[in-house]
Image (cartoon, rainbow, N blue to C red; front, side, top):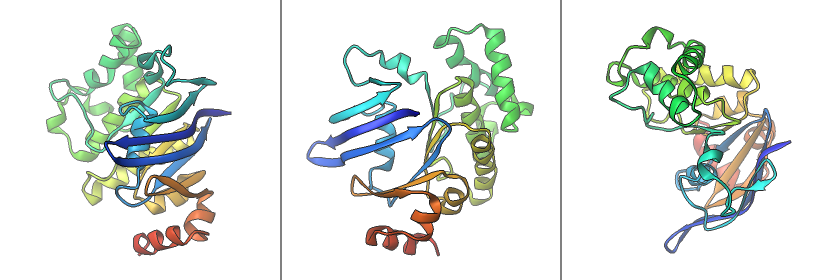
Length: 243
């Protein structure tokens, strides 16, 4: 069953059309990796899905309802999506545990006790339960990103959205974040991931979607798109990327 279905989605910034008639869906339990060169529309698509950007046209169907319909509660919809950003976006004045509980308490109206129990469960999963009292400035980039993942998971989302979660990390820290994401995939979490990590996509994705100039050029299982691409543009991109 599709958790999120995108139909004829478009997005323009002024005269610049960044997304052009995009159609695709994410099934429950599926891991989908979005690949493509910078400026192809991947991150904009992700930001449209969680409505950090307002689409110019089309539909975003969540559980059978178009969430772009005016009567839909956008804030309530957002609680079902976990978002992990390139730059972590942690609250610098909060410690680790507080970063992972504030959204639960304010948005989901959980008690402090329940929020802390949930946060600890996910901090343990990402290997950050020893750092509950640390402030973000005391953590490495990889540690911050693992806290950001735990924070998103603490909201018990239907879909986890990752916007190039390793692109701001030093090379030696990339592995620790990808390891956590592999674990989440193994546990059956629904994930939509914008990534440049082709080996990771090959190993973990159920489906790879290649975007170019605001359109989906090719999509399918990793063995097809990454190993035996059909489209010339995909071949060119992979030739440059898979060195």
